[in-house]
Structure formats: C-alpha cells, structure tokens
Length: 76
Image (cartoon, rainbow, N blue to C red; front, side):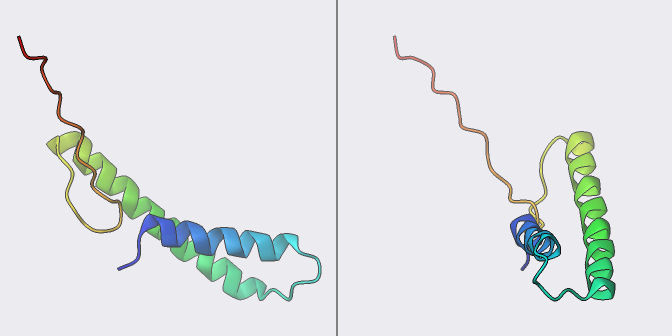
C-alpha cells in the first residue's frame, strides 16, 4: 500500500525534474499527477479530521498510526 511518504517522494521527484532545465518533462502528465496528489492530500485531511472527532486514529495504512508513549509513574 502507498503511504504519505511515497506520495512525497513522487512529488519531490517531479519538482526536481521541473527545476532541471535539461530534464524532459511531460507537463500534462505532471499536471495529472499534481491533481491526483491534491485529491489524496484532501483524503488525508479527512483522516486527520476523523481522528480529531473520534479521538483515536484509524489504521488506514496511508498515515501511519503511532501510539503515544505510555507514561511510567515513578515507583515509591
């Protein structure tokens, strides 16, 4: 499954290619990639909104769920 990290990698590769004056870039394909990425990012925002409302993360595999460290009380 793809993750937010995979999306970032693809987008930064695209940005790098656009910045390189010697790279051959298919602009139509780049626009489609950016549009698809925007949709994926909006769905990730919906995931984080759900977490705020419900109070606990859902493991969708796109945004990794990391448990907060448990507090250890000092022994007396």
